[in-house]
Figure 1 (cartoon, helix red, strand yellow):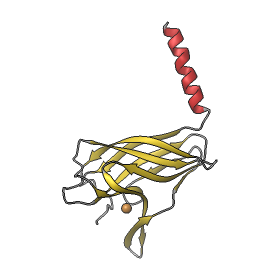
Figure 2 (tube, rainbow, N blue to C red):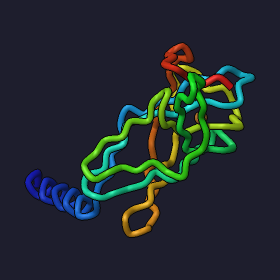
Figure 3 (cartoon, helix red, strand yellow):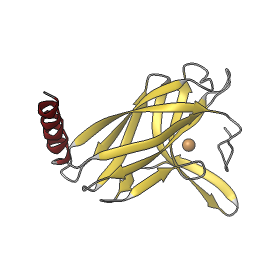
Figure 4 (cartoon, rainbow, N blue to C red):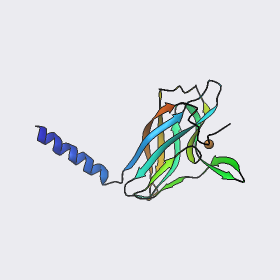
Length: 151
Ligand SMILES: [Cu+2]
């Protein structure tokens, strides 16, 4: 009985890995204050065997979700939308404060520390097909500031 269950499990895992696997870990969202209209979501994204592009995101807590990049130009931090973030096969890309992030704008409510936010990430595979990956992100304090956003 137990052995049978194991065999079924292994079958499921194999059928998943036949398609390249994308793993999202350490996902978090910066907490927001009641009047705040925007915040950022951060995470690590790993692709097992396929070149993927993170091309979009959505969440019920924000009206608009965009993939952004922050960079320093002439000592000034600038950020704005990018078409996508490339995830090379076998690579792990980190979305983090001061770099790539999912920008959540038009927030519908304050995001309180200790709660969770459900996001959906959209990846484009090498075959051009879109893949939607659900992610649960922990809401963490505002003051985790590493070259953060001001808006
Ligand atoms: Cu941004």
